[in-house]
Amino acid sequence: MSGHSKWSTIKRKKGAADAKRGQMFTRLTREIVIAVREGGGDPEGNFRLRIAIDRARAVNMPKDNIDRAVRRGTGEDKDGVVIEQITYEGYGPHGIAILVECLTENRNRTVSEVRHVLSRGGGALGEVGSVSWQFDHIAYFGIEGEGVIFDKVFELALEGGANDITQDEDGYIEIFAPVDAFKTISDQLKGANIEIDEAELRMVPKQEIALETEQTLKVMRLIEEIEDLDDVQSVYSNLAVSDEALAAMEEE
Image (cartoon, rainbow, N blue to C red; front, top):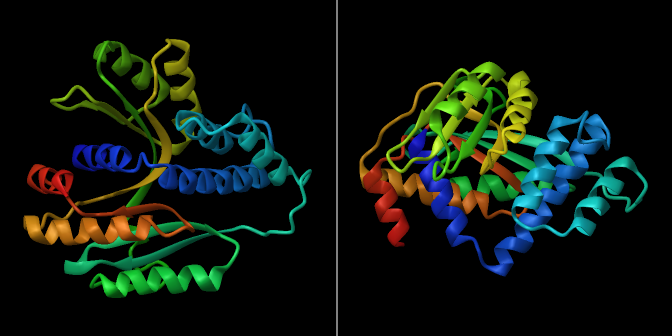
């Protein structure tokens, strides 16, 4: 998974422009609204909302925006917009499995856009269940290793129920855990004043598929194009991202 983490870092650096930030705010607003509607407006008792708010704060989303999104979710702010959560399944080039998580107020528009981008990129939209069986739903944490004692993180994460804790050659620490361990591990890390770079529930492939560099780049470009769609929240794949592909992508 380290290749995916490095790719995420590259994309975050590339996406620092105001336009990208505005798009991110829109996505996070929708995520907060859905989280509140599903589990209530108290982040202490609603870990999905807690994740969304933490992510919003991490990108400096204004507090007023966050509070307004929570009020939309509770119904205090009635704007008449109904947001749906939908996951689309399909394949990219060379048989790579792709999951696309969306939040939308217009299902027809969203599926049309996702289908169009997939088709143009050499992929195709699949039926429900066609690729989701190839993924596991997990809790994930990413921590910048500088100034952090790995053994301490390892101990805290393990006590919190983590399945795997790794550190790559650049010092980046990743924690993989069951979904129901998310709150415990988060509390453990925050209680020890360990700054969390990423914290989310995500889908991870049970087995990754390695392609040649040019083929990998083609799939990566397709995934980035899907991610740029307004209604898309997250995109997951079973593509193995090599160092060579990362280097080539960073140069683009």
